Amino acid sequence: METVLLCCKTVGTDSVFTETMWRRSVGAAHTWFGCRSAGPKRIWGPHAVRTCSTPALPPGRITALQAVDLWRRHFEERGVTEPGHSSRYIIAHLLGAKTVESLEHGKLTEFLSQEKTEQMWRLCTRRLSRMPVQYVIEEWDFRDLTLKMRPPVFIPRPETEELVELVLRDLMKNPGTGGDSQHACLEVGCGSGAISLSLLKSLPQLKVIALDQSQAAVDLTVENALRLGLQDRLQVYHIDVMKDAETVLSLCRHVSVLVSNPPYLFSEDVVSLEPEVLRFEDHSALDGGEDGLNVIRQILTLAPHILSNHGRVYLEVDPRHPVLIRPWVEAHVEGLHYVATQHDFTGRPRFCILQKEKSHKDRELYLGLRN
Image 1: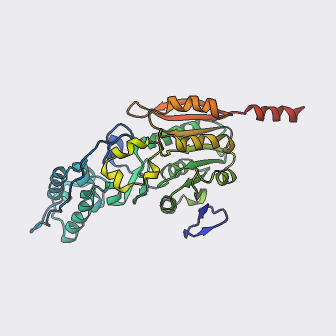
Image 2: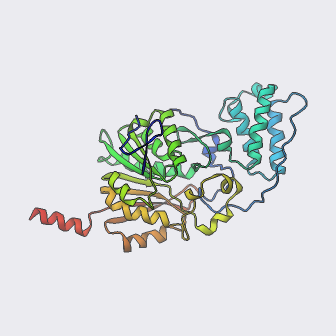
C-alpha cells in the first residue's frame, strides 16, 4: 500500500489531504471523442489506424476560423473521429475559452499570431496521432468541475456524471446522510478524481477515501484536489483492490457509500477499442476480465465488511451486467441486497445499486447481546 502525501512521497501512515462553474456544450450533448454513443466503456467501432502527415504551416497569416476549417478537413481525410469538434475545442482552448460558441465573432475572424498558429499546429498534430482531445488540451469538465487530464489516466465519460447524480440524490433525500452529518464515502478506482471530487464539492460535510491501482491516477487525483481546494476531506491511497483486500478492509470501515466506475469491459471487446483508447488510456481501467466482472465481484465481496448498516454500493457497469450481478450477489454475498438497476441517458441498464442489510450472523450476534 502507498499513501500519497501532498508532496507525493510514500509513507506508512494515513495522510489526509489538507470551483469552477462552466460546462462545455459537449457535456450536454454527450459527445465523446473516439467512441460511439452506446455508453462510457462500450464496444468501440473498429477504425483503421492511418499514417499521419502534418500539413505545413500556412505561408501567410490565418484566422481562427480558417485554422478550424483546415484542420477539420485534415482530420476527416485522416479518419480522425469527431473532426469538427476536435478542431473547434483545440482553437477554443488556445483562445482561452471553453467552446468556439462562447467566443466573440471578432475573435474568430482575427488573424492568429505566429505563436498561436504554431501552438494550433502542435496540438492538432497530437490529435492527428489519435490522442483524445482531453489529453491534447490537458483538461476536461465533469459536472461543475474542471479537471486536469493526462495519459494514461482514464478520462471520465458523461454517463459517470449520472452515477454521481444517483449518489447525491440518495444522500440528500436521506435524513441520515444529509444536513450536518459527517459521512464517509469510498471510491474504488478514482482515476482523475472526478467522482470523489464532485461528491466533495456538492456535500461539504462528506469525507472521501479514494483508491486506485495506478500511481498515475493517484497523483492526478491529488493534483486535481489541490487545484480545487478539496484536499482537506480527501484521503487517496495507491492500492490494488484485487491484490490488497486486507489493506482495503483495514482502511475503510463503516462508510455510507461505496461508489465505483470499475473496469467492466469484456476482455474480448478490448481489441475493438478505438485508437484513442487503445493507444492512450490505461487498459487496466477498462478490461474487467472474461465476463467484465472481475473487479466488480471483488468490490461486492468486500462491500458488507466496509459499509455501515444500510450503506449502499453504486456501480457503473456494462448493460449486460445487471442480470448477472443480481443472482451472483444473492448466491455469494450475505448481507448485501440488490436494490435497483438504473438506466443511463441512452436507455441502457448502466447502474447497479445495492444495500447492506444485517446478515444472519449479525442478527444472531445482536439477539445474543440482547439476551
